Length: 122
Image 1 (cartoon, rainbow, N blue to C red):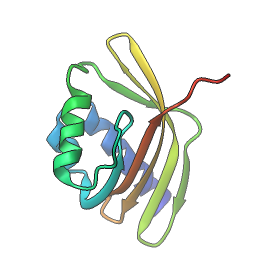
Image 2: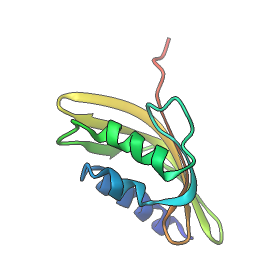
Image 3: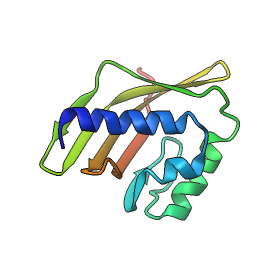
């Protein structure tokens, strides 16, 4: 998988999130993916848990936008791409900065996704 394909897979996730369709977002993950949601207390390792998270997370987020910051790093391997950095979720006058890492397979499906809030600096 090359860097362009990896970045394109992330952009597909962003565009799909902005549709506010939990099933469409969940469909971007492999059946056995691992997912730590930005606001999740537990690791999701099956579709029902992932879908429940996205149903809750996307509810009431009309106008959602997700902007990547300039710290994106991409590493590629023969059949996978790893991308990490930070992004900002914005909706209804609220902005939530978070950090992320995704691992995509050669089809652009998500194998692993971690997202967490960025802690306040002391």
